[in-house]
Length: 68
Image (cartoon, rainbow, N blue to C red; front, side, top):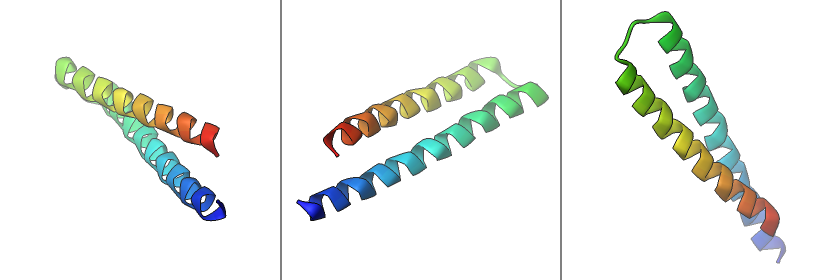
């Protein structure tokens, strides 16, 4: 059982890393959008895609945390 918990904790750590990367990416998108003229449809598409990925990973992390 301890091995399973260790593996689950590793997965949790990886998911947390992915979330942090996505937060940085989203913040960069927002910052760039505020400083530079760009196609707002393309910006919105990138932003929504990143937010959807974030929400999916957050849900996986929540489920994993409940198991641990």
